Amino acid sequence: MEIKAKIKDGITTVKAMAKHPMLTYDTAKKQGVEANFITHINATVNDKVVLDMSTSQFLSKNPIFKFSFKGAAAGDKIIMSWVDLSGATETSESVIK
Amino acid sequence: MERRNFLGFGLLSLVGLTSLNLSAEDYRKTKPDVWTAHTNEDAITKLFGTNVTINEGVILTVESVAVNGANIPIDFQSSIPAKSVALFQSANPESAVCAFTLNENTILDYSLRIKMKQNGIIMVVVEGLDGKLYSASKSIIVSKGGCEG
Image 1 (tube, one colour):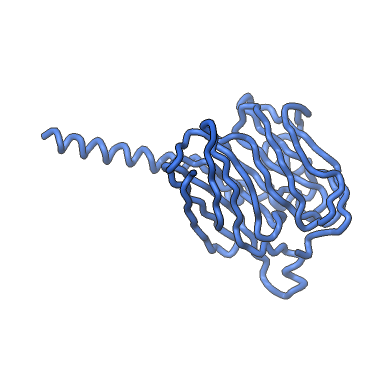
Image 2 (tube, chains in turn yellow, purple):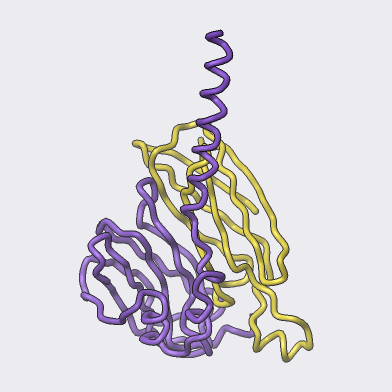
């Protein structure tokens, strides 16, 4: 997962991109494979949850998203992870600039 | 003696921190019916208990004609003090796209990209701390359907 986190005036804005095919049930059936898409993404900074997102097959492939929060400082580490329908997970981290 | 007390205190505060993570909610597990509902109204009711919403306080930004149905940028934001927000659309087999839980640190200002098979109505519903639902919706035309990836 690529994470870019910037803080300005106390508000941190994060742009993130997860690499995932986000295969819908319909498309998977046509291809003869199992559907698989990210079902939950979360982000924490200093053990505080700053993103808590349950998702469906309808996010675009390699989902890009942006979110904001307050209560962090430059130099803090942000940890993001997702879990998908098959149970696979991925965790990445970055530093807030 | 002092050092031992200090260490003990440190352990206690660690326990407090880990229990904070339980504030995150995975709606895929706690409310599975939301994700199989076909219509916006049905999905909203399954997630929030009602589909009665007040149509104000939420800003939803999306182009009215989506050139690429596989990648439709959507922005939504609100300054209403809220506990959760969710996105729905009426074009795909199931309506619910994603749901966020909010807390005192999160800011309700999200951008993401979705895919839609055909024309439909996109709806953002915010669950305020006052227990009321606020919403904004927009009807969009999809020139090239996008669930095929």
